[in-house]
Length: 400
Image 1 (cartoon, one colour):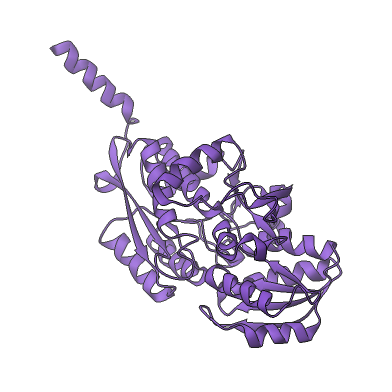
Image 2 (cartoon, rainbow, N blue to C red; image 1 turned 90 degrees about the vertical axis):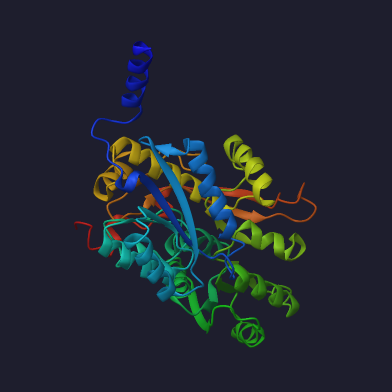
């Protein structure tokens, strides 16, 4: 009996590093995402389930303490999101916030987590300002940003002859940053921006804006929008005969759910920058089977990132022996990132994750072999080409 007790005690000591400390005896992950709006198909319940899957695969505990996941709907409102983040940190003792699937939301929540000394892992918002001029010592840009999107799709289309552009731009932080970063690549590659239209988020009628784009005679109509706005603009562009008239659509930010909604007949040929396709390798295919059983949908690159970011955070907590922010951030930057998509990735001083991207093209209906067989991979884009060079960063944390 005594030996059994000693053995059990030894196992407990081995399970948690010496001096391990977990605040409030729980590691709490808070997901602020779009659960009901135009980005909910791209994030939403899929983000929640991917995060829970990571927690389950990690074992449900870390340092001998329970891991909890809570989720909240940001309603596309920065003030709602920042208030929720503040409440979660002050009252619910949340240790890390993830997703923030809207650039205005991401920047607002970043202000709160910087003030409150909590980690924010942005897996879903695109503005490159997140790790640029608005960077934070506790903020991580995990997945993609407007620079990477422009470096992929924008550069590729200019090289293919699309040297004049007209933008249909979502009128908030995300759209503005995506237009800005893509326009810079267009100019660098010898192209020219001939005009743009700023369109409110959630807009249903793109007819007048598409007429302006057609009238501009630009070779490329750049869609600096996402989610439901992207879907509506592509559908209406098809009705207006934009592509048949000789112009090309640039899908600057899209995920497979968008293409599924559009249908391959409408979406075929669109070139997109992707950050982790479900059919990328054996690991992603195995994860997809489990994810589909829970959600009925294949995961997009954001969902794959939600899983990978959560796992990396929990590994860092375990390695640090605590959930204290400074110690965990140090471990997150020290440990290499290796998951089903990212290989030997790492986190820079500005918080940007160095990771590869892929240039993909939507298949024709004849090429597709199933419901979610949507992309063919054109090229892998190395991290050093996809991510803004640190020397060009506006982040005040970066030493020049």
